[in-house]
Image (cartoon, rainbow, N blue to C red; front, top):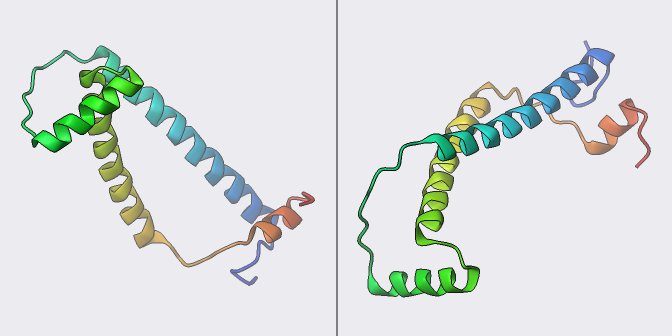
Length: 115
């Protein structure tokens, strides 16, 4: 059996390539899904209370960027939820981690890529 710290077979490279492709596709799909959900969802009114300092800081930010409060708040809340989903996904993946690590140098060498 080969050393787990080195890519020592074509199968390892294929798995690495496929895993990378899956991660990229998930990111693309996740972004696309977010855009569709935001653009097709029915608007619901929510109220928000905040301290005066935060309110002033947000107003200044919105003045500089030209962004609407609704757009700013919606994006910030969506990002917070995405961060929680990412943390959950990371935690699940970490449980399955077998500890194998491959250096960029080893992967490039196995793929015949010059760095």
